[in-house]
Amino acid sequence: MTESSPAFERVLRHRRTLLAFDWRRMLQYRDLLFLLVRRDFVARYQQTVLGPAWFVLQALVATGAFTLVFGFGLRTPTDGLPPHLFYFSGMLLWGFFANIVGGAGNTFQMNAAVFTKVYFPRLIVPLAAMIGSLAPFGLQLLVFLAFYAPAALGATWHAHVGALLLLPLVLAQTAVFGLGVSLLTSSLSAKYRDLQHALPFLLQVWMFVTPVIYPFSQLHGGARWLAALNPLTPLVELFRLGFFGAGTTDAKFLGLSLACTLLFLLLGLVAFQRAERTFADTV
Image 1 (cartoon, rainbow, N blue to C red):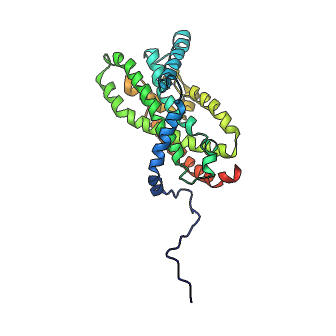
Image 2: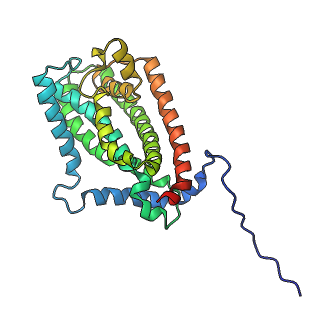
Image 3: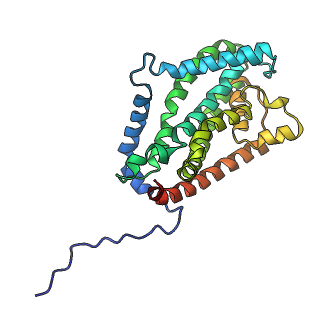
């Protein structure tokens, strides 16, 4: 009497290429993605008095400090814009990027207990951090628009149209760049634990090499090209150009920024998948 053959056979193969993503499975876990977005938002401000108002308060305090120190104290040029609007607009886009990197830059370390016990596509975690960063950006944008409205009454019509057209594109590229950087830092911090302690400091330094508290038009020579290599520089300038009609950017800087964004995303995806395979062995 022979044994009956099994009803089905499952074959597990090693993924051949690092870029062979199973996007279909990512879609199957979309409920988990939304759950993680909600969890991060609630957990961050649970049992706080002000709650999500901290998003707005942080931006207002930073803008006020920059206005007093750099605007009225050091008399830093602002391309003819009111200092509070100049600094607020820069902090708005920079804060969105920093929230993504800060929330997902140590993905493997922060989720080690879960990753070693339960399977799900690991990429969902940094994606959740990226999507969740839209909430503080949205609240801060509303406050910014309240300050922007009186100044917009005297602006030319092209500034208003430009803001509406450029904002989604600038926001999308900033989100993609932030995701790419966070994937790279997550992969590196899985092996080099010092990076998780250095990341907040590196973000602070990065802010000062981004035209948040000074205009790009004030840079010349080598400093100008060095700042242009920062993919966030044209985005911040384009953001201001859309709202105020004042900003310095051109096609070559925008093209370089887009190329760097795609490169960081590609490198981040490759490094993240490689770290995903070996992370459990290094815990």
